[in-house]
Image 1 (spheres, rainbow, N blue to C red):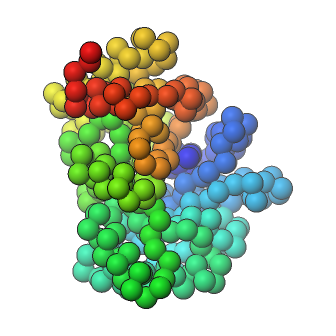
Image 2: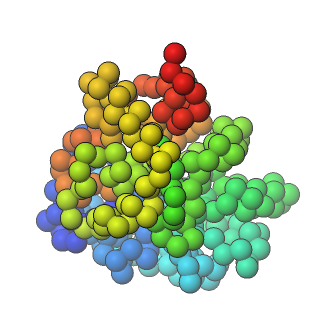
Image 3: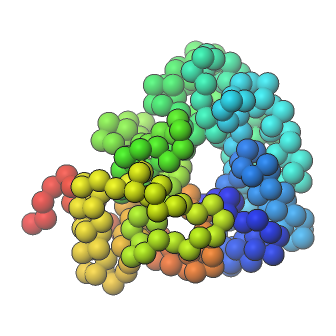
Length: 295
């Protein structure tokens, strides 16, 4: 799933979007609050210029980010996002953040209203705790409403040491993985490749590039360096790059996973693709994550 947060001009966006579709991609991830709506506008212009492409795509819209995380803001932002995109619907909708001061039931009601009106398809929460997702779904079940069917939290082979952005939540820990496995809820993993941690050198400074200080703060730990060494070892054996092993780790979990990635260049699309066809065994997954020794 291509995250539309690294393009600043139409020419750049069109080249990246075209390349993604040419390689078989069809899902685009957008957010109301990203760069004052520029990514949504660029994607909307690209879809308009390719008039026959909209029905072949899956568009994710995110909204209600802090400090405007409330039902009224969710509604007004959804309408604005759809207008920017030139679309009558969001195929998937994710609340960008949670607001624990508001009962989950209030968000559930407004999301079901928008679904019933045809403005959104399946929906869920990004950076929602498992406890809050359970609260939302318990209310939905009691009222016969549609439940959250997806969660978009960070998930990667490298476990986030410090949140990339304040208040953002990871699902890489064992307890979260056990819950997703048990419930079979879809996980839309942002920073699925740990923002370049598994690259031999930092990614080029294009778009919303992570700084070296950010990578150090968020991903540098003794355990993560051990995971990277194991990813490098397995990559050599399989004839791929460590970044491909890191992506395959996300995609080969025992629950539904979808990897969000934000390519800044055409090269980043090309170099990510091998990870999609790489199959890892449960034993390899456990070994990469330091949960067992290799026999």
